[in-house]
Image 1 (tube, rainbow, N blue to C red):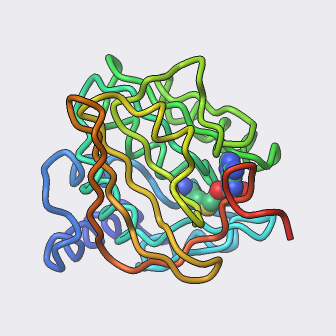
Image 2: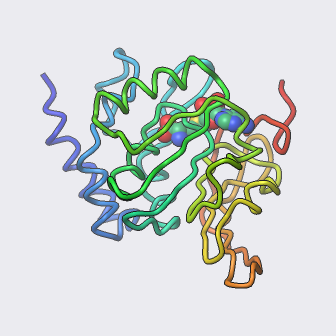
Length: 219
Ligand code: SAH
């Protein structure tokens, strides 16, 4: 029987050593969410390897180092309103949900209803009442809950979707992989006090495509 808690502590230690985990808040979130519960039964034993893994319907859960990196870049704080596009397993949403805490809220959008339902069940089982899973095309954002302090996109976009930039609050931050269908770079998009946009770049990544009106066409 694998001791998942011990494996989880080792994983976080390695992520700190390699510089992916920098802040106390990201460290604590990674320690408090059991990644094995976000995987299909037959892959659970791989939960604490630093690898992306299949979660069904041709989609993947990101490697822990990528989750850590993106969460650090997002610079999430307690009490914030966050939008995630690409719920997948729900793991990234759970990590952000832990950091924003009960005074904050995470809305996470998934286009595939089966994945959304499975994620909803996992988040509920973990008692994460501040995370709401929505089925739909996340490239259009979620106008009813906008503006957001933070937006994280966990699927590969050809360009940052315009509705997401509009739904970002002043002084807000968005992290999004931008590039081709099979190779991207993380972009950090900041909105200034007067709505001005600045973009910086981070590591290269590989995400499944963001499919939708302001993303890639299907197929
Ligand atoms: N954050 C996830 C991993 C994301 S995988 C996790 O922690 O497990 C990317 C997900 O984005 C896939 O589930 C895919 O179905 C979804 N997706 C792709 N295009 C989308 C869109 N336009 N709106 C919402 N979800 C989308």
